[in-house]
Image (cartoon, rainbow, N blue to C red; front, side, top):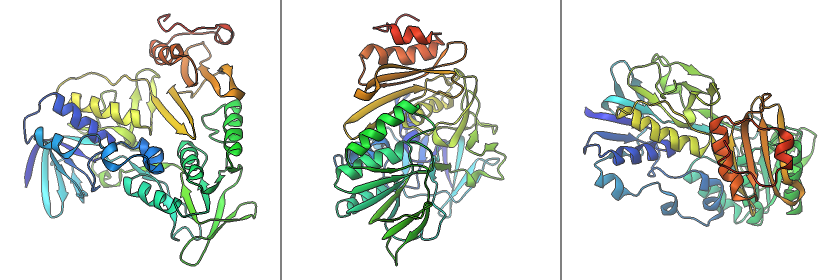
Length: 408
């Protein structure tokens, strides 16, 4: 049996940045162990649907830290080591016939792609994007494919589509919503991005699902809910994720449909067990409600915060949600959460691609902001104002030329 003071279960972004924080606190050698089912050291996931998928970055480019970092700081990291069973009451994890005990545990098991469950979904050349191996397989196939289908109209679908089209694959996006990324974009935003994609050769088929995938061993066609048969050398699916929580069931953990329930300190209901990243449903301080976020920045910041809590810095997790996306030659950023917004105010010129969108609550409080090709002042103001709970008027946002970030 191996004994550690601190154990991180999971080897993704959350684990990588938690390890960074442990190193910053000079945790003594041999006190921290990371258990990862993957064969690769913790790495950044955003490039998997961007530059790594496009072939513009290597594995070494996207590592959070190299092997030397873990050796210098005395961090034990066990790769290719899935945990078979956990006993949270006895504080034990069971791996490969051995047992690991801990004093404090951080659950960072992340999530896995939601799979298609339709006839033909077991055929070859149907891809899901989550790991570095997934991205490599998609890139390799894209270099030889002529026709590609992307299932899903969210940010993974949009990013994958832009990369495939740039690699010379004639790509079609299929999704059940009325417009692209309907859950997040305003109608004006969806119209802009759909036009942008179509101008670059992408076929967009909204209000449709894939009902059947055809082929002998390898996919050759897909059949849509409208009865269309579309040729396909490859299919990339981005229809959401499921939290990796199965191993923790029957262990006393409180688990919701979208993740492990944690409090404002990222603690679970089990003593000395924390959870962070995609696997959590946490109590957000700024929005005063439970939230579940599946983005890189949340995994980074929760990993860091959980490490500090484990080390005795007992502070609540307070952070403005953030993500960014790169699609073709566009880059945009988003802060906050627009759920419950009463008004969405557009600044700039949407058709030109130089615009921002500001979501306001009924009382005028700024909830969220999207910014693309806009002045730096807006990028600075957005997270500051959201965190401060600044109240704004829609007509003022539309009419004011310059937003001053320090006006909180």
